[in-house]
Every structure is written in structure tokens, then in C-alpha cells.
Length: 175
Image 1 (spheres, rainbow, N blue to C red):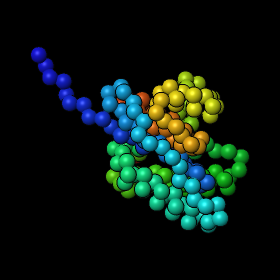
Image 2 (image 1 turned 60 degrees about the horizontal axis):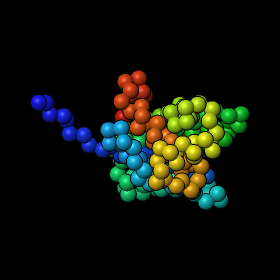
Image 3 (image 1 turned 180 degrees about the horizontal axis):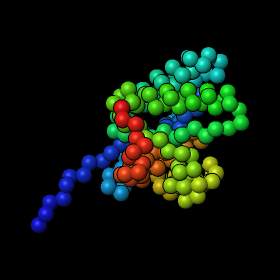
Image 4 (image 1 turned 45 degrees about the horizontal axis):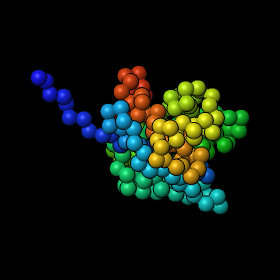
């Protein structure tokens, strides 16, 4: 009779970066069982200068990291749109979203928006309503109050499903 290794649950923080609202979602995976832990968003006041907004995002995520103590983190990659200035500003928010867990010694993975949608819904071009419907099925106790929190939960679920993949492990940025 062989002994099975002791399995420990892994807590994962998913982040959907944005300057107005940075969504966050925390799930726990234990084997193939996925559990909702918490979600929300960091919303700096619109009237703050860019540097202060970035600081507010960092402080908000640092609080989430302290409160929930995730072991791993995942951030949604930025898609490039026609407004170059907006894309660059979003990239700065994404940098802060990657920096906060890295400063806490947590490995950070990145996932493309289409990969997140395909993992959660089964289609790479799913809309926000479809993501919300699947979240209710996959995490029945979750009740995200914003689309950003829902997207962050979807990022966390994506990481939970793909974290053991050797190809995706190569994309991880070690803290």
C-alpha cells in the first residue's frame, strides 16, 4: 500500500488591472476543487494625478495581499487598442499590479484576455455576461460587485486550471 502525498490547498490572487478600477479575486484550489475566497476592486479617485492613482492601486493590492495571503498571483495581459496613450497608462497600472505581489515574494503569471475567456467560458470571444454566468456555476458563493472583480476571478480560475502546464510555467515571472 503506497501513501499519497499530502495535498495542500493553494490560494490564488487574480488581478484585472485598470486605472479607474483594478479588480481582484481570490480563489483556493485543493486538488480539482475550486473555492471562492473573496473579490472586489481598488478604485482610486478620478481626480488624482496619475502617480497618486498608481500609488492607490499599489496600496489597495498590498492590503488584499496582506488580508488574503495568496501563494500565487495572475494578471491579465493588456490588449493594445487604437488609443496609444490610454494603452500606455493601462500598462502602468498593469506594472503596479504585477509589482505588488512580486514585492510580497509571490510568483506572478500572465494570461491573455482570450485565454481567460476560453478557459472560463469555452470561447475566446465571450462577453462579460457569459463570464458572469459561468462564475455563478464555477464559484456559486461568489458575488462580484463589478465587472472588474468578475474578470479578476476569471483570471484566478484560469491560473488554477493552467498553473501546472509546463508551457505556461515558462511564462511565470519569479518574484
